[in-house]
Image 1 (cartoon, rainbow, N blue to C red):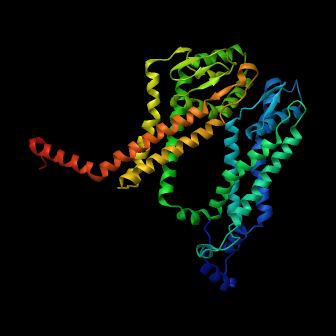
Image 2: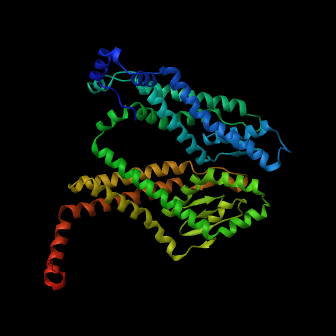
Image 3: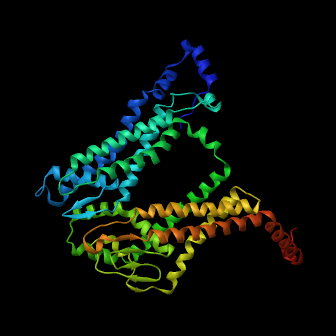
Amino acid sequence: MTSLQSSSLRRTGAARGAKRTDADLRQDLATSRPLVPTATIGGAIAAGGPLLVCLAVAVIGWFLTDAGGEGSPSGALRVGAHGWLAAHGSTVAVEGIRLTAIPLGLTLICAWATWRIGHRVGESVSGHGPDAGRIADGERDWTVPIAAGLFAVGYAVVGVVTCAVAATAATSPSPARVVLWSLLVAGAVGFPAIAFGSGRASIWLPAIPDTVRDVALVAWRILRMWFAISLVSLTVAFVLDFSTAANVVSQLHADAGAVLLMLVATAVVLPNAVLFSSSYLLGPGFTVGAGTTVSTSLVVIGPLPMFPLLAALPDQGPTPWWAGWLMLTPVLVAVVIAGRVQRERPVLAWDRAAIRGCAGGIAAGVVLAVLTAFAGGAVGPGRMSDVGPYTFDVLLHAITSFGIGGVAGALIVCWWQRDGGARVGSRLGAVRARIPFLRRP
């Protein structure tokens, strides 16, 4: 993180201008680059980097599948561009079938690139605007908002150009959705990255009330542990039925190149699958086609595409007796996380501890439901036009389970911190006094 110089340091540096070292001059040049071109080009690079990766992967896949015997390089490049557009919410038509599912793995890659480039942009423009002392005195600083706005413009321009170049009458991507998602990625990820890179975040964050920060910490840790548990559950289910996945690959008569492409496709949709697993553990479950359902209480599945990752689906019919107990998992997660935060940041007031745990759990549930809403969509014709978790039910189950668990965990540890630990300690001391070999020498 680039720290802002105080006004006294700048004045001292100006007074000793002749004695400034080359390192100081290089630092000033590195943190005072032109704001408009730096932020705009940074946004274009953040969008163009993952786009180039998608184009390269598409061309490599074209050579691996038929060694260039069919199609053309331009067609492969167009496929890669459509993959990048799909990661930004653009619907794409394939042979007259409208695909609306978003490959969240590509979206995460785009978000990671946006964060890295945004952080570098923040470092490059940190020398603009008032210094730390003037900002602390209340002077307004528009460096980060202006840089973030220009960053978003550069990102969106790349999206519009890509959509215009890759569009055909058959595919017809959606430019409006691409622009909306480009602004969303650049704003939700690029703005904080620029703020942290420029050092402004270190000034703004302490102004946020401790209660709000604690609630955000509870929510973040709940989501982090919950996604880890969902990923582990998905992995276990897939490994237990790995033979089915191997059978699918053998029936497709896939060579090494095709298997590699299937691995790439699996990695691209892995975050979607984790959200499906999350919905299953919460209880509502999901659908893998019209008229189907996969939940802890019932599994009804019809014909499925030949995709190895689908081997992780449970067998059709009544579920095992223990499946219903999986719904306790989110409650236990919230209990553990809220209790841990209460132990690290003790609050001895009952109401404050309960509010922090409950609000953190509810916030985690809302965020999880929002992410779940993007996990599904149409992935094929007919029945496969309805694939995805039951988002509204996920919202209800998540805020209830995480909220109750958050309250319980916070209150249990709060009770222990207030007087529970002392009572247990006194009772253990009394027991130790009565048993000779437990007495301390």
